[in-house]
Image (cartoon, rainbow, N blue to C red; front, side, top):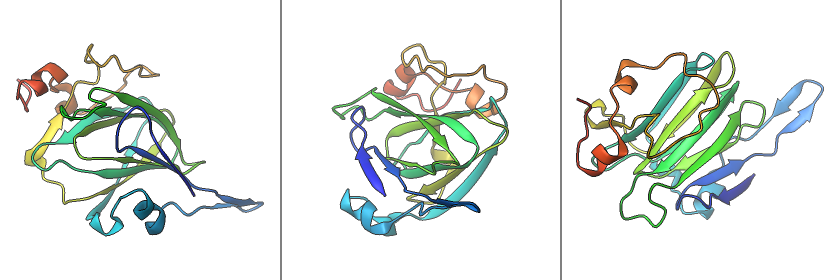
Length: 185
């Protein structure tokens, strides 16, 4: 497994496994504790695994947590997504930097996203499954959602948005987040 620090955002890592392919399909190690430790990620610090399934065109994000934040390791286990990470840590040297990835069930690559970064994705296939490994139990009272179409971010989503949650539709702007507005009007 190869691990690379993503230059656009401090603390973001891309993990690329080496699948073993034969006539039956493939076998791939999708997580390795020693490799995570080698870049300073505590594998024992993860507390919860979750899975989402999305239809083509669905957009989820841009999500982060208030309070202590939430670090996560995300992977597309089936299908394909356009995945986006935005650095929303005001004290970070890469504040407002963004990185884009195509994550796919064919490659099983994972992205580590540190606390304080926003994360979102758009499903490029029908369906697309995203596996999340997070470092603390989910607390809905700490949900923060940044508008996917915030002009200050200008994220180049590849498809028209076909569906999103009511929560994502009520998202705040980056300017609102910087001003301390954590919930949508």
